[in-house]
Image 1 (cartoon, protein in one colour):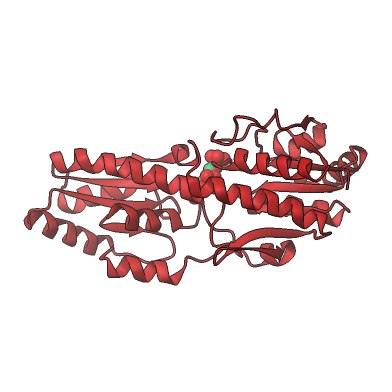
Image 2: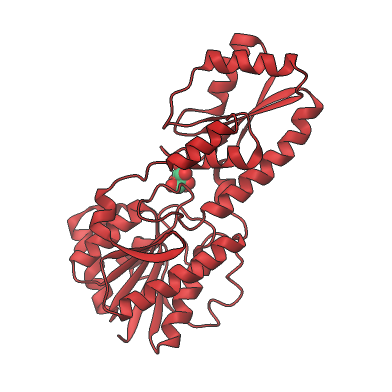
Length: 320
Ligand code: F6P
């Protein structure tokens, strides 16, 4: 193999730069040129690329976002677009491609694989909804961001006997909300995977304050609805002064945590080594601390990863 390419696609997350750097360094260490594609699949279509050197990735490891930038590319949903993407990569002499992104990006990776481009996909999405990996890149940093924000909120909430409803991202997956609730000592985690009764929550909230508690935190996954809608329901039922915080895209940014930096290094090097061994059409993942490769088609057919029942039990035992 003489040349491989790397791209980041879909929603960015922290750790993508560290993963690009690992791909570049692993490629160069094996005498392979590495081409960085700008703006995900859009860059493949537009032939928007640059040759990456150790200098190009110097100082990037600790930065959030992705210096190659990302995009959600509509052209890749069309068959002519998919053919053009594969032709462009072949024209560039690309013999292997590393795709860093979430399930939508992996779908594009599988299509390119089917058009003859050997591909390894790296799971990168704060949602942690990609199956066949315990953790996706960016999840740990997003959780750290949430925990920092909620710790700050608790200071102000307890000064005013307030209830805060905190909205996390995650699309249809409640992982961030429930994991952050455990990490922050929140009172509730409202997630799409588990039914909840707002009346019971309101009764329990009133009881907490009667017992002398000075703050309550409800984590709400965006898949359940908005923080504002939940806050309004609480106000309507028990008249509590309730404030909201919508964490939004803040969760995706910032310097990657140590865990994400090491995971990025392992995924990036592991992806290149897999391509060198002749493996392709696979997603790299982390299972019980070990790197594993899963057939991309199988991973995509499995749909969204369900929340670990152990995490549910842990949260329930802790009273969440
Ligand atoms: O999939 C990652 C994610 O951040 C989701 O948690 C969120 O629902 C979505 O992307 C937001 O997408 P966009 O960046 O297009 O607003």
